[in-house]
Length: 131
Image 1 (tube, rainbow, N blue to C red):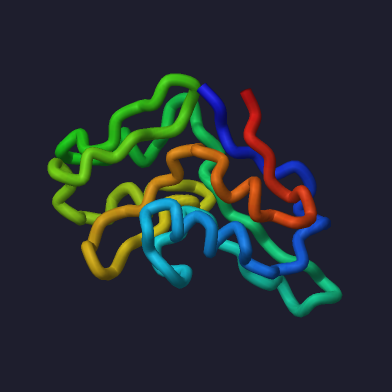
Image 2 (image 1 turned 90 degrees about the horizontal axis):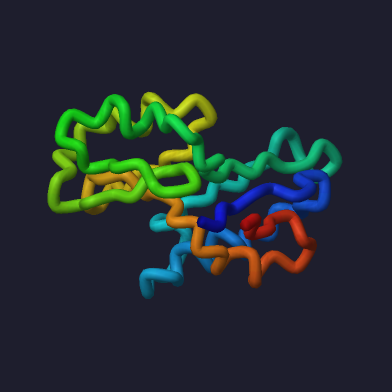
């Protein structure tokens, strides 16, 4: 199964095109539904931080889910079954890199599905889909 990887974070200019693309994959505008998070680490001179799911083989987010709403995905990472999710937030707190984003509208996690849609919108080649 393919997985999203960061090729070179130093190339990121903070345009957030990947975040907008990620939100659009489900027909949403803006940034609130993005599974990727880009933030400055101290201005343009210091660069940006790109947080994406690393597709853990033994994902801690799934291990702490009390309802098994997050199930391991073949090749790493997890798949969310929103009908089982109770919105406890354990998954977001368990991710060691903060890659589980949170949907404050539905009060459920936003999980990267490693579709690679964002890759096509990054003009600087920061992201790639690895097979």
